[in-house]
Length: 297
Image 1 (cartoon, one colour):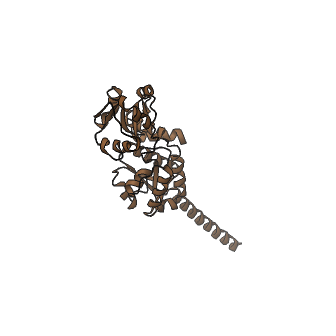
Image 2: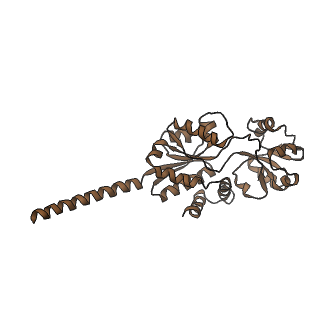
Image 3: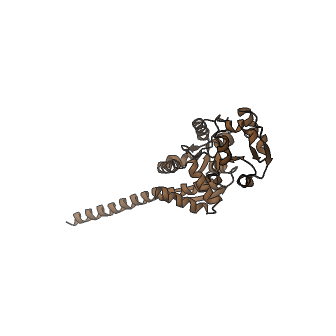
């Protein structure tokens, strides 16, 4: 009987040890640490915070570095200072990898993905949201002349007052490049304004069209429309998360979580998020939290 008791006691102790070990392992897995980065502008910070909230919901221990210079952040992730951040397909391909431009979103992603893989980085599937170059117009003027595309703008240019930022006229990815693709733009007038004032100039009817980025918060207003780049002049800049390959392989749940978030980040969604921060003056963290709770909680 004494031997039986001792045997039972040993088994009980072993069971407790094993249980504690399993609990510790499970705890360490569920509390895997990850550092989420962001560039120092609104859209990157909002998206980065959404990533962070989603990962915390899944049990990750998240640290945030959400104001890194655009020129520094590729080095930061290569050095392991951050594990993940929101990038753009066009930026990865053209700026980080110094690759050749393509106007096809899938090709841009595949080329960026292959190039980043050689640097120990994994490009997750890109989001539908595209923060690229575009031309915005006063909606009333666009409707008046039936202007929906950049080809339409070129045909009606003599009726349109263009609000430029100076450098845009000369850039190969600006008006000079557009002219080679679409033909010369002989605008009624072409005046240079500070970029920060362009929507004010349009709203005051001092100009009709201006260069824009396609997710700017002002575009949430029905007063403006973005013209379709019908000849695919500009490269795609779809939102694309970059993760260190080591972290991606060790944490399949992280990859799944970020992919679920990205599928909901459309161009219209990014415009609304930017508006809430840049125009409505809410903090990027509160905007990210509100959006995440509305879409995932």
